Every structure is written in C-alpha cells, then in structure tokens.
Length: 573
Image 1 (tube, rainbow, N blue to C red):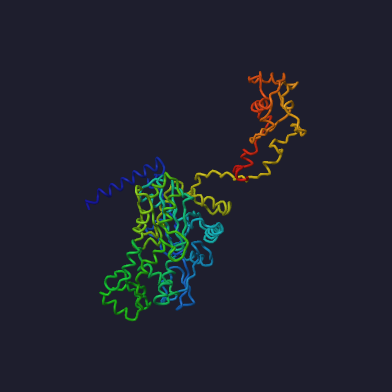
Image 2: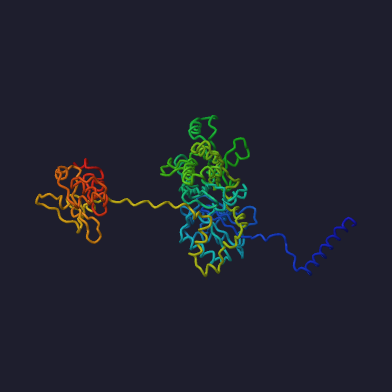
C-alpha cells in the first residue's frame, strides 16, 4: 500500500488546489475546446454514407428500395437486402435519375430508415448534407422542407461533396487555400471534374460527363446476355460481377491480343461462379486449386469472362466505343485544366484527386496518370492522388469542415428557415466555396450592319451634304468662281464661303481647267491672312480655305469613300 500513498496524496492536494481556485477566481476554465459534433450525410445516387462526426468510418446504405420475387409482399430499404433469402431477379426503385432526385416517394422512406434509431438518429445535432453540383432550385427547396419540417433538425448546412474532398485533401497534405487542385468525382450516374483555385470552385473549368457505374453495369448485362446467359433482370448480381472481375487496362490493344489467344497464354480469362443463394450468397472467381469449393460449384452456373473484364471500364476513357458523343475522363481533365487561368494550370496538374466508386477498379489510377502524362506538357509535374477508400473520402471531409473557423455562422437554424424562407437560405449554401471573383470577360463589340441608304441619305449627287445653309449649284453652265470666293461677315469678320464646289478624284474639266483670272481684293485679303501666294486660281483658294475650315465646308470624293464602297469601286464596276 505504501506505493500508492504518494499518488493518493497528490490527487487530494490537486483537489484542494482546485477548490481554492474556484473559491478565489471562480470556475476553472478547461483547456480543451468543445468539439462540435454533427451528423454527416453524403447522399449519393448509389450509396448513402451517414454517420456521426466522431465515427471512424460511415455506414454505407444503398440508396434504393428493392423488391424480390421470393418475398413479394415486403420491400427492402437500404441494407435490409441482406435479410432477403433470394436476391435473384430483384426489382429496383431508384430515387435519382442522372444524379438528381426525381422520385421523392422513394427517397423519403430511405432517409427515414437512415435517420432511424437503429442507424443514425439526428436528435439535436446539426446536419451536414451533400447535394450534387448545379442542383435544381426545386430539389433544394424540397430538401430544406423535409429536413426542417419533417425531421425538425435544429440546424443544417448543404454543400457539394467535392467541397468536402477539397478540405480533406488539404488537411491530409497540409496545403493552404492558395494551392489549387482538381477533383475528379466519378460515381454511379455521372462524372464531374471540378478545379479549385484559392479554395473556391472555378466555374468556367467544371466539366460533367454522363458516364458512371450505372452505364457500365448495363453494358456488361448486354454483353453477357448476348454471349452466354440472359441476365437483363439480374442487375444486383451483375453489379457484383463488375466489382469483382473488371479492371482498367493500361494498353487496350495489347490486352485484346492476349484475349484472342487460347490456353494458358491467355491470362485474362476468369470463371465466375454465380450465387445460388443457398450455399453461395455472393459470387466469386473460381479457384481451380481449391477442392472444397468445387463441391459447392457442382450445381452452380459459371460465367466465363474474357475481354469483358477490361472492355467495360474502357468506356470511362472512350465513351465513343458504345456510340456516345462524349469525351473521356482524361480528356475532360485536360480541357478543364486548360480552361483555367494560365498561371494556375501547372499548379492544378500537381494535385489531381480521384474519388468515387469507379476509382476502385484496379489500374484506374495508373491509366489516368498515363493518359494525362501523354496530353500535358513534359515540363509540368504531374501528381495523381487516389485515397484508400475513395467512396467514403468525401464523408471524411466533414470533420475538417467542422474545424473551420466560424463554422457555426454557416449553419442555418430552423428559426432562420421559418423567418427568411428557403430562397434566401439557398444563397448562403450555394455561395460556399464558389468563385465569385472570376474575371469577367469584356463585352464583345456589337457588329454594325453596313447600310448604304443611311450613308447616301442627305447627300446630293456630287457627294455634298444637303444642308439648308448651302446654296444650290448653278445649272446654266456659268462659272462659279465668283460665287466660290469667300466674303467677310460684317458681324464677326470671319470669312465664310458662299459656294461649295465638288472636287472629284476623276478630275472634272470644270475644276482642272480653270483659267487664271485677275485676283479680286477679297482674295488678296484672304491670301495675306493665310500666308499663301497672292496669285492663285479660284479653285485652289477654295481648297485651301476648306482645309482650314473643314467643319464648315465638307467635300468628299464618292469613289474613294470607304463608307459607300468598303470593298472598293473595282468590285462594282
């Protein structure tokens, strides 16, 4: 007991010290910060990842309602399908189409099951819910209404799953917000490529491909149904076949040559044992050396898979193989990088993050690196990151989100929802990590339509402006030199021309063959003021005066007018 006496004494002394501090200085402040706990829900089109922020990993629940042939009266919601005795010929009810919620009568029962006491009850915890990129306003209104009015959550925050991926990646790599990265999210219904610059999404660089795991499963059903068995109604089983056997080939042409061989030289062929739901619950790849499994496989159907193993995932990189007019993932990443500002393009190539269920194909990361390396400049450094669990990586990003400063200010409480409404709340949710400071393009100058009538309007046949102040030309053939002579205004003393004679470039005989005449006194006065030679023709005096007073007198050559003949007179003659 003597060994424990100092420890008990120290504890008692610490308690007495604490009591003295409380009595003198009030309650003792704890050094530990209160960590905000929340319910994180990553609602995907295939799986819902839900759990508390303190959990190590989320609970994966299929986002669908299933009905089996063996038990027609019961509906299996989420992971209740594990209780089904015969999973052959399952009928699926999916709430999402192309990644967006369209059937609320299916989505609401699934959420009810997720937030039940057995899975993940909400209680009074704030809720973080993910939504797909560019979600429709009507869908957002329904989400807010269900969570605030049906589940009566105390507070909620909505954001994109790629935002959580960006936060998790920055925390793991200890990156600042100034370091850009590009997130490739390839899931069940679609594939999104989102570049992040200075911590915000760069909207001009976002790309979406309607290629996902659902398309791959359906294509594999078509191939197997054409070659071996009719499995068009076995979506659940064929999806397991895809997950267990398919891989991404690094060189497709080389793999096709190997698949064409027979015997032991063909290392691609695999025999897949289909489940019978009595002895075998889930299918697996046959192992010829295992004698125990051979006894179970006697009455089971076996699929022989050859080039289907790598041809199906190849659609992710070349959707045109099945007739889709769409670019592949690698090409979309390259175009997304080049659509960003030039000073950020090389930095984006250093941080390429791959998430989503399709990333679990063996060889996917290596193929992405090979494709990007061949399309990007050689001097750029390229880093492709794929987490150990790409499916739940976005859910794990909710923990660094809770540690962001002033996160409580981002939450929307039920009182704010009832007071402000859903439309104002959407602005707060949708502006999270969105680039609002993007460089605005300069408005393009409107193309002016050239009209000849507008240019000819108000002109005489000689190209003069038809002003009210200009006198009419004489038509009796008399010389206009006397009228063309400027006179002095009695009021201001400024010389003003009384006539405006056209000087055509074709050289009219009236102006080119003017004879020298005696110079009158007004002409001499004008020549002195303009410091010109005293002896000139009347037409030359008129030209000099028009150069000095071009605003008052306008004379043009129609044949050289760019406004009337923009393509030159040669095209009209």
